[in-house]
Length: 301
Image 1 (cartoon, one colour):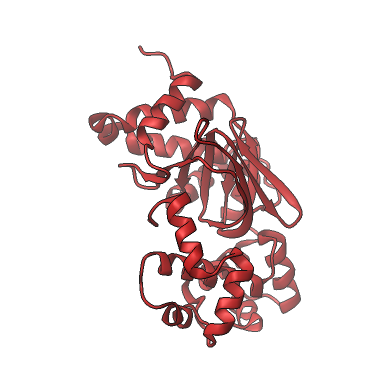
Image 2 (spheres, rainbow, N blue to C red):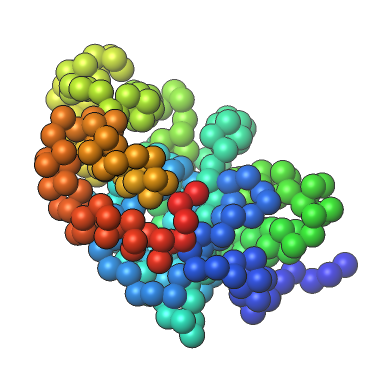
């Protein structure tokens, strides 16, 4: 039997799978690999639920006064889509390599249901949108096997889905998995907020009001506002604005139409207000931001 890949072989495999600057797709759905060669500071990001494993270089996430490390010794897990700021360290000589695993929410819910039946699980862990956890040996082991398998189409066809399932399990059963599970669990006290986030995602370009969102999930406005801020680190209105701006950024990068038309499609009545909000959020106008994206992140997926 072959021994598990060492950290050095991790990097060699990752460099082979991610030859291009920016995000590199893999044959396995939900798995992509980032190669970055630039120091980045105060970059707005909006991750979907999943986990980020940095194999070389380092990243820090900043949300609501807290700092979340994800580097060779820590990984970042995201339970709900949440906008935050990010910084990273890299160079052409020592590129940052990171594996992004987007959660299969149906699979995650199945694993949560199974783990809920285990006595050892801490049911009282508070729900959190972001969690930074130590990179434990079981995580490193499955990542090494995943990287190796991505190079072999036959192994990928046979083992790929099983490795994805194991990776989901390792994250959810990890040191701080209880806080992720509390956000993913459908019968938890945060369920109303999570359902609200889904509604916002579906209708972000409409004129949603806070009383309407609160009523939809059966909560009072004060309770909804407090619960929303506790889980996402931001207010509902700030969240909706950030989602609109991130969606517009992708649409502009994908050349979906003129900027004024895209601004209206994401819910802005005023192109001038959109331009002001965009520059305030991303620190660049839309045209310059798209150039920056292509240089540092590659073509948008």
